[in-house]
Length: 396
Image (cartoon, rainbow, N blue to C red):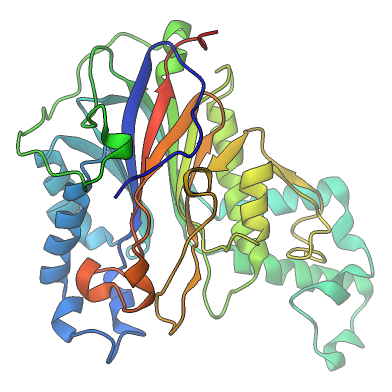
C-alpha cells in the first residue's frame, strides 16, 4: 500500500508526477555469508534471484530505478538487456561486485548528462584540507583518532610522525573502491509517467503494464534556461561499511563527495531539483543522516571528532528531506540478519519546495518476523516513492 503524505503540499502550476524505486539487491558474493539456516539454499542461487528481483522491480512500475550491490558480471547479460526491453536506459558504476546502477524510463525522461564518481576521491579532498587547515599537525589530535598507535610505537615517534601515521591510516580506510552515479535528467514535455491520478494514495500495489515502451530517446534541442524546472539531478549511492571498517567518517566523507559533485553539476540552476537515493549504511541518529537532512555537520561531531581527515565542518547547499520520514512521520525499522528489527539505513532524499513526496510504499510489518531473502531475494527492502515535480512557478 502507498502511504499518502499527511499534509497537503502547495498548489503548483504544471505539476509532473513520477515514481522512484531504490533497492540494494544483494550482491551475489554476499549471499554466501550470514544466511545459512535462515533461508533455503535454492533461494540464494542467482538463476532464481535474477528473475525474482526483476519481477519485484517491474511490479512497482517506477520511472527511475536506483540499484545498489549490482554485480558487474550480470550487468550486460541480465540487467541492462532486461531493462532496455522494458523501455529503460541506464548506466553502471562500480567494482566487480558492489556496483550501483540507475535506470530511467525513456518515455518520461531524457538524460542530459551523467557521471560516475569514484568515492576514493575523498583521499584527495582530505589531503587538500590538511594543507589548508593544518589541523593534522595538532599534537593532541592522534589521541582521539580511531587509529590509536601502540604504546611502544607512540614513545619512539615524534608528534609529527605520529600524526602523519594516523592521517595515512585514515586515508587508507577511505580507499574503498565504491562508486556513485549522478544523472541530470529532463522530464519530456507532453508525457505522463506510469502513475495514475490516484496512485499517490492507491489502496493496491501498482501492476506492471504489459505495453512495451519505446527504446529510443526522443530527440530534443540543446539545454536552455527555460527548461531548468524540468530538470532533476538524481544520484544513487552505496556508502561503505564493514566489520573491518565501521568508522562513520568513511561514510560521511563519501556522502560529502557526492553532494559536492551534485552542487557543481547543478551550478547555474536556480532552485535545483535533487534526489539522492540508496544505501547509506547509516542509522537516523548518525552524522550522515544529520548531514543530509541539515546540510551541516560540525568537525567536533561525536561521530568524527579527532579524525585528521575531516579538519573542518562539512556542508552542502541543498534543503533536503527524507521522503519516508516526510510521509510517514518517522523512519522505519526492519529485520535483516539480526533477530530483532534494526533502524533503516536506506533513504530517498528529496529537495524541499520544488519536489514533494506524495506517497511511499511502507516496509511491511511482517519484515520483523521473518527474513526477507527467500521472498525478495535480498536482505534489504525496496523503497518506493511517488514524487510531485513542480514544472512552473508556485500558484498563489
